[in-house]
Length: 133
Image (cartoon, rainbow, N blue to C red):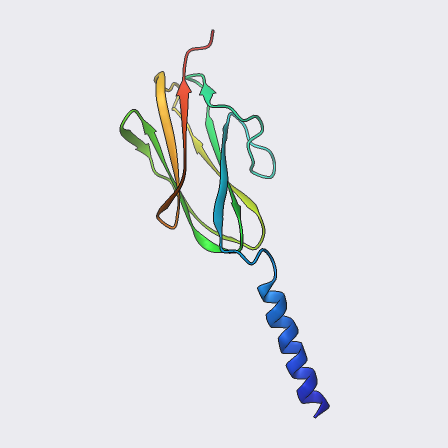
């Protein structure tokens, strides 16, 4: 009888522990743009203005627990220029990074990036590329 009670208690502890954490499903909490990344995949210096020869880094910050697909749609004007995606699985708050490279030089003008989680739009950010002064 003791072993049955001990087994039931152990099972309850495992089920309770598995349900702990944030208690929330995976979701996008914010996005960051910049020219460099920190070691934890967040953006080092947040900005929305870039030079034509910069790389543009995007960090997608998520909270909650779960798996999913984070995808981004980079646009220049109305044209889609890239649509990378990453499958993720997180148990804690996390950052997933993406990079847009211009291959030497981005045209100046207005750009945007839209972030999707499992195909649902989660955030959009506008940014500009301009010649340095």
